[in-house]
Length: 145
Length: 145
Image (cartoon, rainbow over all chains, first blue to last red; front, side, top):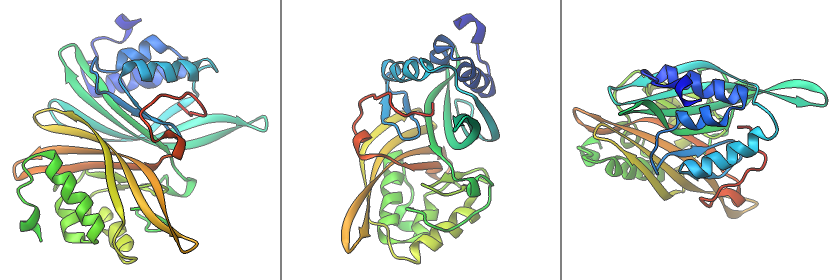
């Protein structure tokens, strides 16, 4: 599995591999996208903060036990340096509700670091977005900060 | 105002300045924490994705028109390189509900980049955390992914 996604020479390649792994429910490919570093961190909508690959693997194993995730990445916004990259992504996650597919929108911030073996994910933070806020525009209502 | 927070020689200094600015409702100090780059990005709980300092300033101006934000940063988890740093933070935001203070918990991912003038914020992503998930431990329930 790991061979399939290596060497991930640019952040876009590891991002593609990450979303493909979610779409196919492939835990080995998913974990291969993360840096081998104790401090990697993951926050999913409604979930705890997961630190380290074992905690992340445990949760995605549970997610994939229900099948793959019908997810697509949209509106990728990139901040890039030579050694680290930040991608802000609008994820569309298709869920079944009352026997009908429904898209839940999620903002995700993916941070990638250049490792000796290629680019890898070091932080994934995802949170649900309201339908009226999935555009880029500013709006000052009901923000905590 | 800007003199007060410059030069921000390490990520922790700009993080401290950022939360102090929220606590004091100081828009100039807050904006001084952000990198002068078109691609800076901010997602607040329930809000849109804001790209660029003008959009960010507009929203925080609106937030501060209701007064400062009673916010404290806890449980800072750091990923650090020479030029970029990721801090995952548990924010406690005190709000008034039914005339009684109530703490809302928020996960925030703050990404800092080393700029010629010092370390600056390039991405802030904050989302509400449920009370049962503000520990570090893993839990596999009800995650979108």
